[in-house]
Length: 260
Image 1 (tube, rainbow, N blue to C red):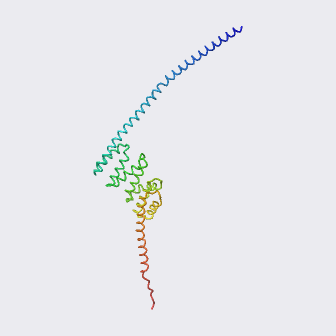
Image 2 (image 1 turned 120 degrees about the vertical axis):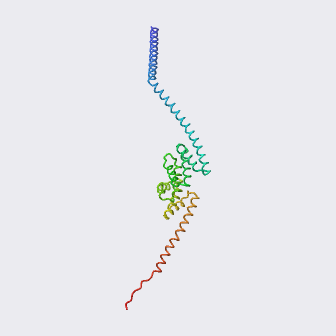
Image 3 (image 1 turned 180 degrees about the vertical axis):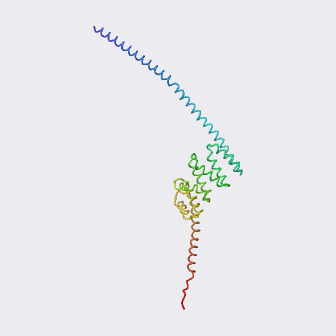
């Protein structure tokens, strides 16, 4: 009797094992079928993604090659422009620089700055406009923006009409922690001297003198200008005071009429 029970139990276990194996096989088939259906649905999407990735990588590589070619070409043009500049052939130099600017590549900013430098020797207005365009270009790095602004300030400092276009920006620059603020202060001082606003000029120069971080050469220059301003202004004040005193002393006295 016990043997019969054990035999039945073994048979039941075998049946359960077979059933489990069958279920597993069915599940596996269902999984394979689901994956097959999913692949059929998504295969075109995956293919499109792969094509897009290949296209992007190819385009990036193409752009790199094109930029390198453009940079190489602009570099060669710039070298030619410098040679023409050194040989005093400004017309050819400007032609090469304009070509670089037109290409709108990495050398655009430095070509524009060099162009403005050449123009400043013969045409202040065009040089000023070129510097200003570099300053206002949103793609220009900050260091070149500040360089262009201060250059525009220096060449226009004796022309109030031109200087008005950059005065606000130069004043703003003079209040920053940027190293270009010292140039901005000096420019503002020179502009004040030009319009005979000596008190403002002295104020800007004194700010330079008081700043321990200001370049030593610039502090020396500002000190000389301050001494010159003080020596020029003092005699004028003394002269005016002397003239006033002289007039007071020599003023004729009124004669009273006496009745006989």
